[in-house]
Every structure is written in structure tokens, then in C-alpha cells.
Image 1 (tube, rainbow, N blue to C red):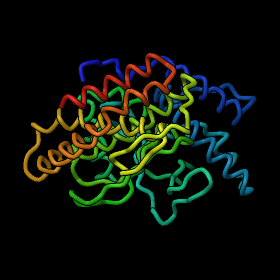
Image 2 (image 1 turned 135 degrees about the vertical axis):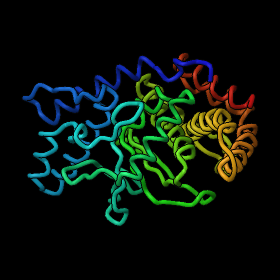
Image 3 (image 1 turned 90 degrees about the vertical axis):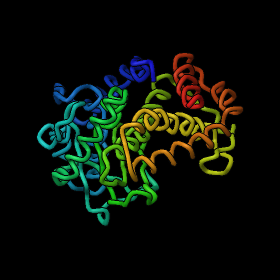
Image 4 (image 1 turned 120 degrees about the vertical axis):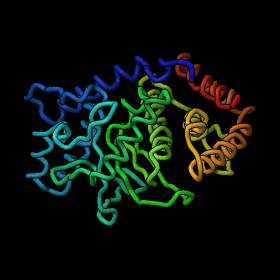
Length: 302
């Protein structure tokens, strides 16, 4: 990537500030909201955790928990954070058997709350190392604003299928399986933060993607709505650019794993070359459209 400003998108910056202010007003109408000290993007992420937690507590009649969220719109993140090169991050590794499922998500999710504990030191160190690797590879701005809360799921071995996801209701939060290699975890941070970035950018620009349009997805081997197709054609190229940049700094099994991944993604992305320009026509904002096209083209050239 040659454009250091690729991820700095003014409409999203405005969205973060405006949404945070609105959520804080909803949680505490009579209080003057104070910043957490972690930055506007972190405040935006944490405000959504507080809102989700407060709503759940209100529905279940847990008044003490509800009051905690209204009193802690930043979910006490400053006292639970892990130092990284990108600033404080919140890294947790909750018991997966206790993760809820609800109408807000088809997949398990986790909301910061009064019982939140940081992940064990080894996992926090792994995450901090992954943030550092990503930043050194040109993705610091992306992760600084869109991977604030890290929810580490299952420990896997290199070569096993790694599941990861994001939720539109919890922007700035990433859910990931993990191996012990920071260079691999950094790749998956970038992928999921990329989804968060695009969700925010589409919202900030008022871009409504025609849900009737569909394109063939080589990743799913099926026809996918334009929204999902565009997401894949953004998030996977980002990981390709990252992988190509770090590959020469790895060796052994990790290098073989990443090289195989890059070869696979080259094949998949080539299959989208004809459709991607047509899908981009559905994005009404020129600046956003240009960013999506630039990353896709750079990855195709690898």
C-alpha cells in the first residue's frame, strides 16, 4: 500500500463523534459526556458496548447492571486496557460457553460489562505483538480506529480453519480464533477491521447498496448480494497486501502457510475482476468508491 491516508476517511470520523455523542445522551441525558482518553474511535466503539449492555439489562430487569452502564459509558475500558503501539486496546478471552446469542447476532458475541476481565497475559502479549506487526506493515490507522476491542475465541493450530467475525451492532470490535503466531493474528485483525471500516464508511456516506443485485463470490462459491461481495472484495485484498508485505520476514511453517494463503487469494480475487467494477457502480460516494477500487487493483497486481 502506497497511500498512508487510505483509511483516514473524514465522513467516518464525523460519524464516530456524532454517534458517540448521541449514545451518551441516551445513556445519561443529564450528564455532560467526558471522553475516555482513549480517542474518538475508541469512545465510539465503547459507547456501543455500553448501549448494548444497557438495553439487555433493561430487557431483563437488571437495574444494578443497567445503572452500571449508564454510569460507565466507556465500560471502564481505561482500567482494563492493554498497551500497544496503537494505544490502549481491550483484549478479552471470555468463556465461550457463556457467550450469548440473540436477535442482534446469529453468531455468539460478547459485550463489555461489570464482570469483564482482561485476557491472560500471554494472550494480551500476543495481541499487542500482532498490533505492532500490522502497524509496521502500514495498517496502523485501520486497526487504531476499527479494532479497539479484541475478543479472542478458540486457540487453534497453524493450518486449522480459523473463524472470525464482526457485528454491525458492535463496531470497532473483532471476534477471532487465534494461533500463537502474531503475524497470522495481525492478518486476521486486518481482515475484520476492514469489515468494520467498510460498514462505518457506508453508513457515514449514506450509501445504500441495492440488495437485489448479486455477484458470484469465489470465497463462498455462490451468488452473493452486492453488499457481501463488496465486503469480500475489500477485506480479502487488504489481507493480501499485508501478507505480501510480511512474507519475506517469515520462515518455516509460517512462511509456507502465508504463501499458500496468498496464492489461494490471488486465484479467488482474479475471479472477481470482471464483476467488481459493476458492483462499485452501486456505491454512490466517489471517495469511497475510489478507495475500494484502489485496494482491489493493488491486490490484483500482486
